[in-house]
Image (cartoon, rainbow, N blue to C red):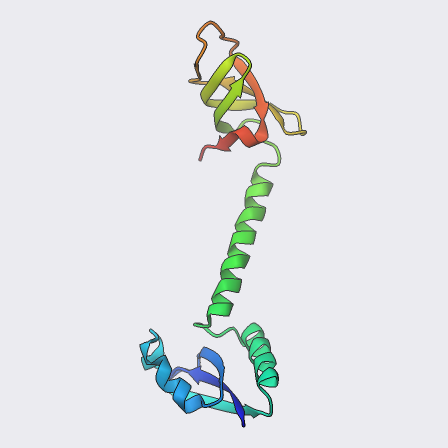
Length: 157
């Protein structure tokens, strides 16, 4: 039994979708509910001896040809976006000196929360923050600054 790798193209020749099926025609009809179905103007079909060969060819084609509507491609693009944002955020917070932050931390003196500016980033995860509007659970403590761990602050935009 033949296994088909099919490609759906729009009027301008833009690749919309790549898939594998035993019956490309039957699968074509199943795609009616897809948002891109009415854009299909051309279909190309390749035959393979085994399903495994067809699936390998499909995977390679999706990676190299980047169809607009393959979920696997979308997930890869989303993953790349998330990774890029993560790298940018890490670059942004390598040194927090001079950055306004929001802080919530529990210490032996009570709870500290509010905003402030990082005046010293010791590089080992410890920050020294000059308070703007810190609220203390123990009002008798008013040092004007607080030291905390980097994971206890969030950068204000």
